[in-house]
Length: 171
Image 1 (cartoon, rainbow, N blue to C red):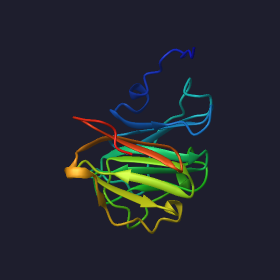
Image 2 (cartoon, rainbow, N blue to C red):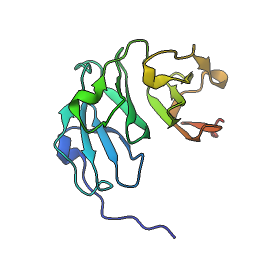
Image 3 (spheres, rainbow, N blue to C red):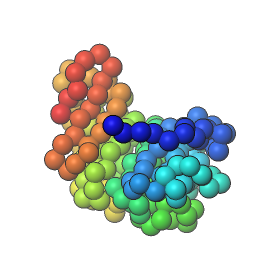
Image 4 (cartoon, rainbow, N blue to C red):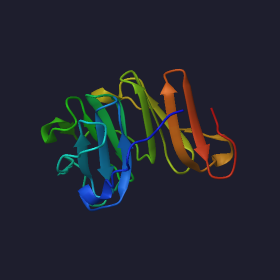
């Protein structure tokens, strides 16, 4: 069976509640907190570099999550009108950009640089086949019955699941 290492309290690194963690490789991990600070680890989460504020994320944009398609492409989604995208090493402050046109989302998953899927708390699902160029998100598709989402994962380009609070997973 699988085993896990010793837990690291990431919130002690940023000092704020963690909104999401993404580990696109076995050694590369990124954590974003609710105030828009990002911390990076190059050893699988054992040690974390000093956090920095994401470019373009304001105090009212509270991040909801982070997804990384690989070690150089990450997206942070927020409950405000702004998000942040890295098209270079996400552990570097200057690699993050504030894109336009990304809808407010609560959950994000990017199984590749060619596909990102996001969802909001109201059950709207958005997709982009070129999210890292900062454009072209789909119009929202509503999950059956306006289901309120509570999580999203797309482990491959052809498989995605949205979980919700009171029922089965939706694919």
